[in-house]
Image (cartoon, rainbow, N blue to C red; front, side):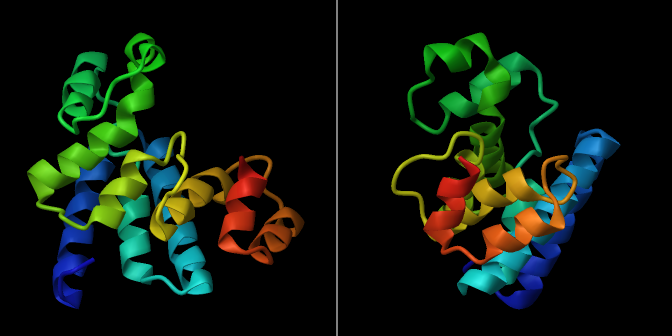
Length: 167
């Protein structure tokens, strides 16, 4: 992110506290594990670890929002809302979180906003941080299918290889 070390630390703590009070304990634990996995993947692939942690801790911050809140926030990003997303607004939690980060927390880092917005479905042409968060959300150690052996094999792949493997 384009802020000083102390700024990102303060913002991360502010968002972490928001997430802790906004989601269930189970979801919060998942968010922390995802953030830690993002940090690990960022170190592996040469990205900023603090930015990775921030994206990870933020990604599900709107998960418990009401459908109408999710739809309203997601529409602020200017992208179309699909028929599937209208029928199942919970799929918009990433887009809503990106808007919330921008509007309420002053986040301007486009890679963070892209990563958070697209962590559910992914998309072609994602930036490296978006790829990291997309993968981290699928392979954080709390996921039942993630074993040490599976994780070791995944971490031996290139970033693009990792994303393809977790699709």
